[in-house]
Image (tube, rainbow, N blue to C red; front, side):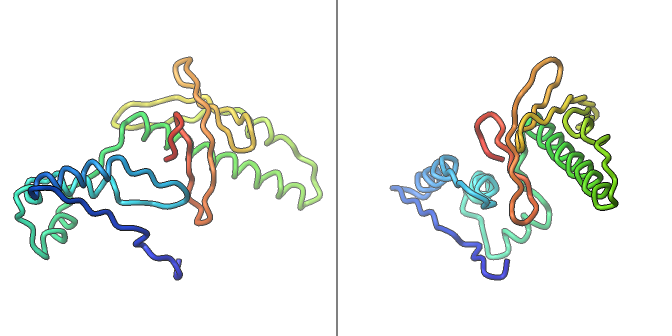
Length: 175
């Protein structure tokens, strides 16, 4: 967005030594909670602060460029979150596609509701790290999806952001 400022805040830390200040900064970042449609680099910054180069104060003006180029620092997501997020993404787009089909049929003057059944309940398969996960998906509310895997279910609220991204509330946490 042309009017957005990527710097929405600053975090500072101090301590009797550089290492104490670094640990305080890591703790502050780990405890930070940002609400709303804002993407942050907080987890990535924590990983940068935990590198040996940063701990040993061996950083230069080109240090970050080298880290980025070589992809030395990466934020790992828990596998269950990756799989659930992929299932929600696919489910959302499946429903949007079926909804588009219904609208298109109405625009043609046809009354076809055949897509409604496959909009409310369907199966999705996700493959992640050589493992296939077969989900049953049920639309239980205008923005609530019930994912069932292996007999266990969870309800996930999904909100589409202004830029077309998806925010999902999984286990009480927004992702």
